[in-house]
Image (cartoon, rainbow, N blue to C red):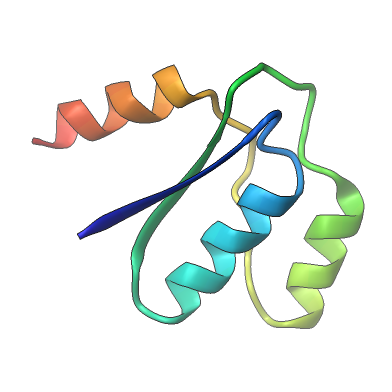
Length: 72
């Protein structure tokens, strides 16, 4: 099963949700409705405190769907 967390920019909440879901063994992804310039540094800091990694860059829903289709 794949889980997709979606928010407006894929900058904060969805990134954190993806990281925690992966920690618990889920095949998780996150995406935003709109493009943004980067993931919030505070989110990266908090995830590091929890020994989790944030994705390198935010992605739109279209980018994630395209990636998932290529894996099928």
